[in-house]
Length: 382
Image 1 (cartoon, rainbow, N blue to C red):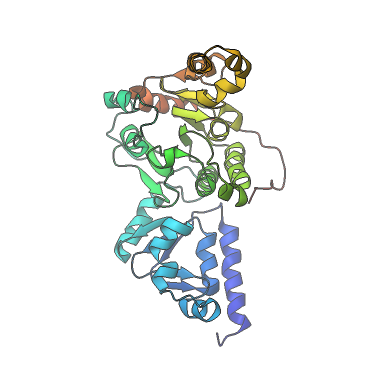
Image 2 (cartoon, rainbow, N blue to C red):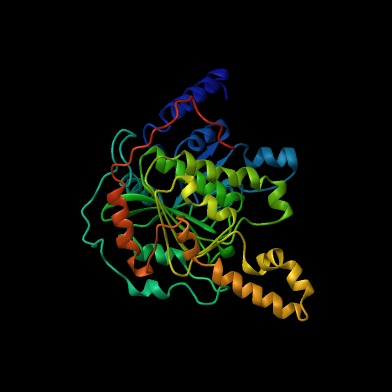
């Protein structure tokens, strides 16, 4: 405070260095105590922020200022503790129980990343064979479309045992982004989580996914996307708060990225969510689907009346006719084979073969080269 504008200039110098280093080297902030005022912008500019339960806090204006201006009485932890920034604001990507755990977490994160953008991510020896097949995956998707399953468990089964490291685990839990290894190689994983909100995309999950895809692209980590999404979350609140703009971030991130991209449709891939999450038009190199995949513009209950509305209305038994068209739509369109017929899906695979198929695809894409149009930069939909 007493240093006046000199302290502001010092903050500015730190911020400028953060920006210059962005995309060149990994930057990780560890918050082990209070971080207030202008200082909070530095961790916001870095790639990942780790906070410590009970001791760390981040806020622009502290509890005293908030109380004097708005009359709201709140503690430092309630205003900007690790739980707030991990689950609500999304400003923290990881949280730890103590300082030692936070530092160990930093080491773990760095183990997946190259030292700078000109190097390759480290490859470690793995005793988990890439051709491992787990028969339990063949039955993981329930036959009842309304039933949920844990995509997290699916990912832990497919990738090297114990290698899944989630980013933003508590923020927007309807989506999963994580580092993992496949045959010892570092990859970025993006997925819907059907056990939470049916895995729909919304404002927060769009921000979460797009940021992670861009990070992986910066440091040349292949992106593997698992799709089980009924679409974007409808609602007045979402529309008023800019779901169109936020949803466009996913499209931009996938289209802009030049790393190897592989997608696996496990169940629902409906409408815009199919397009956004790693479709061939987003630059995906290899697209796979499980036999349980449902790839369509919309669900059969909504599509049948739109396509066959006149026949249904004119039928002697409209309800029966409607059900007939729904079943016809399911058979013709609501499966992965129609998409495979027109070249949008490369292969329909047994779920238990997923690990091996992904490893083969990564081998194929190791020498991928993309010619980028020369330009200063695009306009990301922030």
